Image (cartoon, rainbow over all chains, first blue to last red; front, top):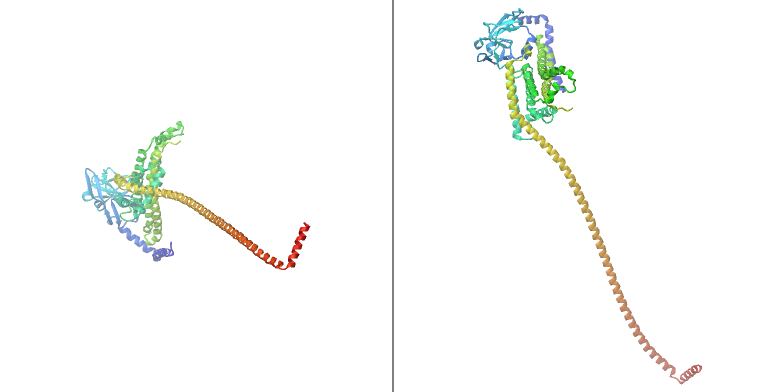
Length: 379
Length: 164
């Protein structure tokens, strides 16, 4: 970091701290008044609710402003309930807000009843339910007695998924075009940037873990999974549309990816792999009744760990950044930005590393599992 | 809690998008990229091998060149040596010839000189004989022109005969 950059950094901190002194000088009354004023027309800021709202899937892409009535992109809802039904999620978000009492816990619960084409349905925690006698009933925090129609809506995550896939295709097509046009020459432009990654996946992920040149068969899968996770991880770090969706931190997505790895592992497994599970070499026969269930569970724990690792890492990253930014809103004072913004920046940079690392780990471990399933006996 | 409950709709879309992506990328992107990269790597390996080969070849060529140069040098030296020998031999022969010729000339000259000398000596001898006869004649005439002298001589001669 040059001296000039350091000076600029100091300057920003000073500017950020200046109003802090004013607030302290003005005393408590002012801020208390402000808080009371806000409470009258806005709910108190709830960090965990805000964070959960951001890392979970939604039927709208909230941009700015209050939760209801702010600026948001309303996404289409597609329901399979006695035929295909499509309408905008605006019909829910601008629908009728209803408060009811939980039958068991007696807590008050808020949910939204749709209007217009969504009149038959209600939305609670981004889940869509069919209305039962014009209302939903709750038992122990869960909706009770209402049908949940198949929901194929283009949610925030689905849109992000489409965008990520399109981005991969556009970038990769331009790279592939370069090679098609120029043949085997030194790479330039995007190809120069992406080729090392492709070669990295080929040499350090596929070739290093899958023996005997069998890696070429699995290379397309490993490359796809690597770039899919990498691009979506990076997109998740961009705070505004079209990024910011917590796609790779969504358990559904990581579940699908790890199931893919599991299926490929099992499909490519050889006799030796199963022999290690049902008759582990070197284990006394008396121990086999214990070993076989353990090994059977082991088949599933490996992809399960893949699923949890990616989900937890990406979600945790989002949570930390959001929590740090929330410091400003918890204290209701922009001056806290001097603390939270540099910290959030630091975590964001760390997340760039994590984004790459998780893509690498997922692809590498997938290759490792496939390689283990393909391994020939060598005792 | 619903953070860790998979959602069927998202699962459906993820599966659809991922499988389409896998298919399209495999068919239209990974293959050309990987084949181009492999091809280039092969090219580079070949080029490197060729460079090594060429270097080795160059070295052998250089060694060969050195040998040829050495041989040429040796040949040159031998040719020069031979030429020198021939030249010196020629010079020696010429010298010999010249010596022989000059000796011959000298011998011939000597013979001529000898002949001339003996001829001259012979002539001189005859002339000297003539001259001495003439002188003797004159001397005798002078000695004997008076009667005393003739008498004395005759006496002497008689004395000589007596003794004998």
